[in-house]
Length: 217
Image (cartoon, rainbow, N blue to C red; front, top):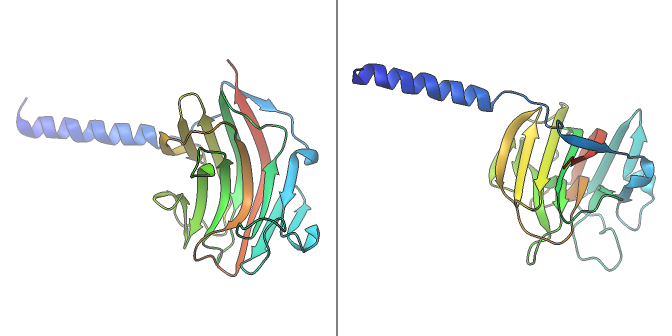
């Protein structure tokens, strides 16, 4: 086989591998869905405003919003403003767990975390943060997970393998991130809005069909 043919075979193989990587899959196969109801959704919002001024649940959609000038979620906290759903009842320290939900970010929201895998060894507090910056969704601030995300629903699946120290992020069933996560003794999932550096004055995200899975061993 001459060099030209070898190169063509290489290119075809590369295209095939990339196509396979971009193929949408069902990430929940082999996992067991955990029961959830409204009691599992602990809403963390600025301590000095009523819940209905930063959170609304209607027609199956959780809408959460916060202002850059808001207070933290408790009087003693020194953290930034947030309006987040903290999943209760499924804290974990081992095994393989998965968060699934459909998310929506309106145009203009930026500089804000919209999903977290909480828990890590110091000096970090989280294993995963998905942050909106400008028009894209990032894994922290380094890796683009989804471009042009505004004003459209997307399905988010985050799989955390504690024992293997691995985090995978899927958008609409397509793998977008697969790397080592941080350590930590206890973890849980959060979604909503949590102000970060250079955040917009008004920040909002919406979530529906939130589900928690654990891999069946």
